[in-house]
Length: 293
Image (cartoon, rainbow, N blue to C red; front, side, top):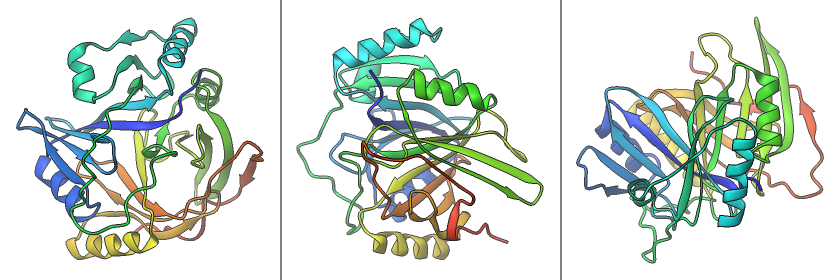
């Protein structure tokens, strides 16, 4: 009984058009209109959608959906959450129709504070994904949507919750000092992706419960390079420039979304297996990943 991958995200935004432009011009996603004119889905593979963007008077990640392999495992994980003091609520027909899944449970993640969902049976589309421009596509099938990184207030308790309750396995750690800041990050996997989740204590202006970034992985480093040129040409805010990570070897860059959190767009990430050995790294980047001046 454990999650098997990052499934989808819901995003609330005060600038729907900026999100649509970002999704099309940089990430070559397919926009699918909802019946509500103030919302749309974003498709990037054979799932009906992976992101849901809704107009709001606030900018936030409104929910995070974690996939579970089948109904038996889903119900078992819901019971495990309840047994550990995390109340779950079965999703109704309207919510299932919106998420395009067979069954789901809602809960508030006690570590991050995010509205979260566990689900099984996502809707797959017979019609091929139609990117806005020619790209190699996204590495999702066996690896899930990508990864998310949370700032958490109680670091030790958060690691315990994700490992012992949701069933993640620790991939590795990065611990380093930079100026007056001390950084400590734990990375978790639940499928071959090096990490589907990472957590770290807050620093600087960040606080526990803040959403750091969503990572999307392309099947081609060339798509990353083309997208980086587009980001620079359009003047989209860059969180960190091109670089390569020490632990998962992802070559990527980070931008700031219209909702204020980051998206990392990368390629060539390492995969993990059953014989994976946990290690600790003393820096997050082999090269690059420098913040703008």
